[in-house]
Image (cartoon, rainbow, N blue to C red; front, side, top):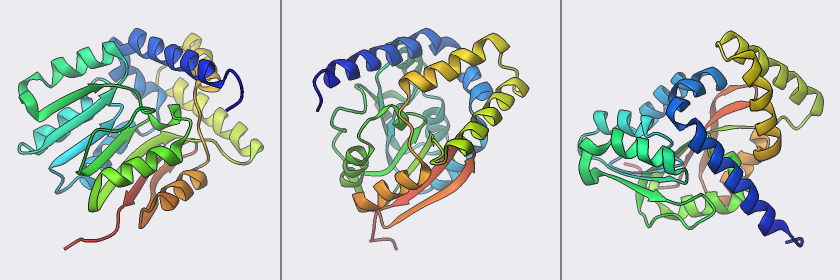
Length: 237
């Protein structure tokens, strides 16, 4: 790595963590005004989770999707990773009724993943904070049981600069129409520019296939935002 890179990464991680800590109490509402199709993504991910009994979530935030999943799957075991202390507090409170069916780890996605095997790994808008996405996908592949699935939603970037500029315009229009305060929009865009590490959808798919996934597909997209589904090869009965 170039000199100074580890320090730069730690500074960026600290900035992102501070942002999530600051926004934790309003995050569940705020994300609906920032991320197009968020409810549809959650609902689709629930459909793709059918049959999963041991789940790992990468960056669980306030535990909103975990709560939906555990209500629908009363015999399942759920492991989650979250590096924001305030988010963890909210997730732990929300999921306290599920006892040790919900296990929450204090770590970021650059650390080794919890030991598997899992039958489902999910992530909602967290992987764009990871520098080496190929390394993460390889770890996810290794911790999944054969025939099992990864479902990941994330923000991306268009490979063509002109198209990316149009995507950003579309994103701004969405945030305005969704009711995000005008003065907050420049802060969202500045945070994206400074702290996010998005890649094109084609690169995400290539990294998933290189990690060993037999299936890797985009199942939903809206300009800069995409939901991907990947499955490890057999067995599937």
